[in-house]
Length: 117
Length: 131
Image (tube, rainbow over all chains, first blue to last red; front, side):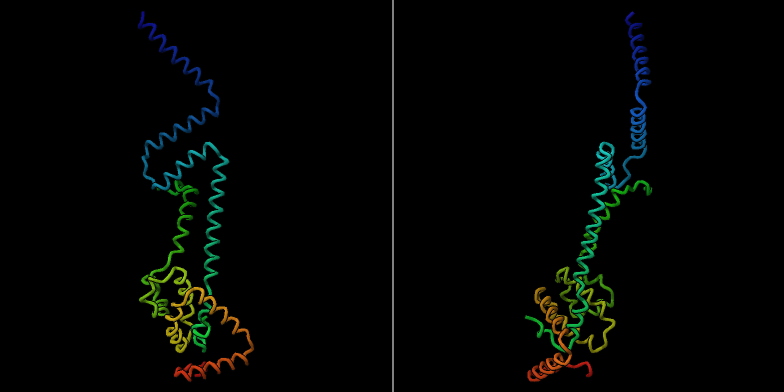
């Protein structure tokens, strides 16, 4: 008797679970399916990426999936930082290039010490 | 690792991290033979020079192949003295030189003649372009 009850209960549970599965909304189902695929992919392809890629991937997963706007913002900020750094580097280089004057001083008739304080 | 695994975020981060590496001072051993020839008088002290000064000197070395023999010799002769100046002194020298270049050529030649006489009195000879 007890065993029958147990079997019935198990079947009830299965039935309930199946029913609840059909009631899950399509977007939730899609997310679960996507998460399952990702988990399987990670399982079959264990951590061959460099540390930086894994770290970036983790950040992407945390912020990218939860806050899509933050993901775009982070990418935009990074791009701005890169452009700013490149611009600063080239400006600095241009500022340092006084070689036209330097070569003229070093090869002129007048010795350097006449121009030095 | 396939290329589609290289996400833009990671690539951008790598580029950003590489930018400071471009600004690192060049070691003497990394200079080209032409640069080494141009900056030869500074070979011994090169690695003690500031990064900014090295970059300026590397830029300076670009002009070396275009100089005639007399100017090459003069540049070599003056490089040590030039490198020993403080950045402020070099900046002032540039300002003075530029100001001097703007005065009329007649006045400039008179000044040069005066300097030549002073140097001759001290036993030093200044070679002119013609010589």
